Each structure stands twice: as C-alpha cells, then as structure tokens.
Length: 422
Length: 141
Image (cartoon, rainbow over all chains, first blue to last red; front, top):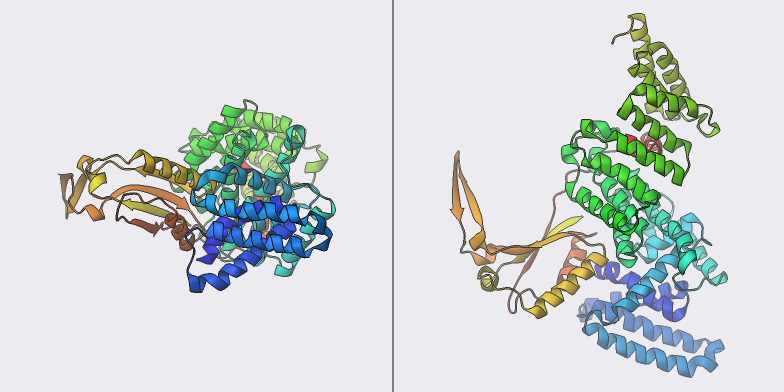
C-alpha cells in the first residue's frame, strides 16, 4: 500500500522539494527519507488520511533540519527557516481543502520534467532520471526493465544528479525559444521508454512490456502539463495507436506479424480512439504537424482501415513526403516508396527505390533490396527479384530474417524456371 | 493493468436524483486529477435502471425485461476504466474519491482480464529483428 502511495505522490513530492532546495538530488533524498519514515510509522499508526500531505510535511521538516545543519547557510537561516516552517503549516492545512495549491504543484512538476530531461545529461541518464523522479520507479525496476545491472542504473542516477548540480541547472521551465528547442529532448525520452517496451515481449521480465504503459502514462501526464504543445499530443497519439497493436504483433511463439497480416479485430479500439482524439488535439493546435504528429497521422491511417485493402496509401505516401521534409532520412523515403507502390502501382515505387539505391546510408541496409525484390516480384521480374532477395539475405544480421529472405529468393528461382506466373 | 471501477447505485441514483452541485464540483476535480495523473482511460455515468433493459437467456429463448430492477445494491450508476500499476494503486486512488452519495456507498474495483498480450519467450535474434522492423516504421508494423 505504501508503495502505491509513493507511486502516486513521489513526483509531486520531489517537484515541490526541488523548488525549495533548488536541487533535484537533495529533493529526491528528502523524499526518500520521508518514505522511510512512512514505512516505519504507517504500519503502526495506519495510513494517514492525506498521505501526500503527510509525506510533504515530514520531508519539509527534514529540509529545514538539513539547512540548519549546514553552517554555510547560517546567516540566511533565520529567515529561510521561518519561511519554510510557515509554508509547511500552510500546505498541510491547504491540502485538506484539495486543489488549493494545484497550479503551483503543476508548475513544479513541469520544471522537474525539463530538468530531468536536460540536454547536459546523456540520453541514458535522462531516461533513468525521468523514470525515477516522474514515474516513481525504483532503481531496481528500471534496471530490470532495461536489462542492465542495478548498480549501473544507480550510478547513472547519481552521476546525473551530480551533473545537474555541477552545471548549476536552474529548476525552471525554459521560456520561449529555449522551450521550443528543449521540448524534443523531453519527448525523445518518453518515446525511447516506449520503444524499449515495444521491442520486448513477455517470457522475459514483465517490466519490459510494462515500459509501454509507463511511457504512455508519462505522455498523458505531459499532455495535461503542456496542453498547448501540439507535438506532445502528437507523441501521445503515436504511442496510443502503436500500443493498440501490442497484442497482435507477434505469434504465440514470438514471431513478428507484419502490420498488414495482423488480426485487426484484436486491435485495442479504446487506445485507437484515444490516439485519434490526441491527434485531433494536436491538429487543433497547429496545422503544421511536427514529426511525432506526422508519424501518428500515418499510424492513424492504418488504425482507421478496418481491412488492409481500405488503407489510404495515397495519404500515407503524402504524409511520408512531409515527414521526409521535416526530418530528412532515406529510411523515410524508402517507406514512402512502399506507400507509393501500394497506392499507384509497383513501378512508381520502384522508380523511387532505384533513386535511393545510391544513398550511402542505405548501402548495407537489407530492407532496400528486400523492398526492391518485393516490387520486382509484383512486376513479374522474378530473376531480378531473386538477386535482390539474395542480397538482402546477405546483409541482414538476423538469422530468422535471413531464412525468410532466402526462401523468397528460392521462390523466385522456381518461378523464373517455370516462366512468369502472372 | 487496467481496472474497471464501478460506482454502485443507491436509492437516489435509481430515483434519477442528480448529484448536488457540491458533489459535481468535487467529482469534477477528482476526474481532473485522474486525467492529470495519466490514470483515467474512460468513464461514464449511467441512467437509472428504469431506463435500462435486460435480455434474459434460457437455453434458446431470449426474453426482454424492462427496468427498473429491484436489487439496487447490485446495480451500477457509473464506471471508470483506469490504467494503474497495481490493485493497490487502484485502491489508493479510489480512497481519494469523494463519497458518491451522501451516506453509505460502495465502489468496486475489478481488474480487467487482459489476454496474453505478449507471447512466450522472445529470443535475442527476434528482438534484434524486431528493433530493425521498428526502424522500418509504421509501414511494417
């Protein structure tokens, strides 16, 4: 039960303390101390009626002690101590009246988000810190989810806190241009957590797939903290729609099932509806979609199609074109080629794929010959298709994929000896 | 995990008495809290059972029975669908809910059955392949 309270209260607790202490590291330690006090006292005294306020009061008293013990602050102490004490009283009282200090708490939470995802930190550190401070996960849980030793995560967090202190990262929400520049690093962290969970399935630790849920939850929280940011809703939409397919994307033995072969009846319609609603929020805020909203819009095209045949490939191709301008990448172009071929025929797709063949970034990318082979098969050019599949098979590092591609190559060989089949 | 949170009916909800403004405000604030915490997936209030209908099954027979239904305590007046990490978390959230009636009332928490979303063991190669398929983006997912 205490764990559940912690899960609900920890982020707000840490955020509030960080504002007081101007330091995320000591804020988290104080919050932890309060948790320890709860673990000691609640089993006997029972869970207080307002557990969040109880934890905050304990932590703030300790904060005052900490400041008092610190001699360097002695001269400031009188003032600050009195101020903090009255704040404790006020907040304990106010919390009985519910949402009195709400805006205050939300500002603190948003500050915590931007500090935990600050660019002075490595991506790994940002992920660990975000899950720890905002998700309320323990170091052990994070370690198990990311399949790394607990000590590694613990060290990442310690170092991250030290870096934030050393670089004197202020506890504040960046303004205007800086905010625009720093939002992507926040969204990246959330999406990274999502993908970490998305790439895993059970059999391993339950925590890996649960990362999708953590990421979704973080995304939903961010959407309420920053309701005016179109891309936040775009990211939420993307995650909701992708998560709607979680249960259909592998066979019971764990083999991936491609999108067009999935059982659409088992897609989670609740998540799809939520995703489409989030996408609408994004488009109401900004007619120019950012990369997350664009990817969500592509995912939405698939989600709206009740059968693969109903897919609006023309729209998908157009969205990939915009996405490609927004974040240029040959992989996006390759996807656009696939969409174009689905919309307008394999020859149109092949033209674009051929243009991409000279891209240095795709030179050893097995999906290029794999897609090319696929288009050639559709055009009845089995001989050429075979060499593409063989090339793709030689490039992939996955044994399973190699088998699949080799089988397709063999199929083409059969076809070319018996003459064109279509 | 997902939980369905069921608010039980009472004489007032069954009589179609609308909640007081005070309760509506408190419930509004609570709902907002749930949304801001990323917990709330869906939720609705239900009309009294007098507007409801039951279809009774007996072997191959189907009989339609109009409401109201008498066993008030077994009826529900509204529900939420929540995304939580544990039953404990759901309980903790429910405890924070304003009392939905003036007097005695009950809210029931039931975990939603989730079919085995994730197949058995996933080999390292498969994971690698999956990561690559992901890079191929929405097209192949």
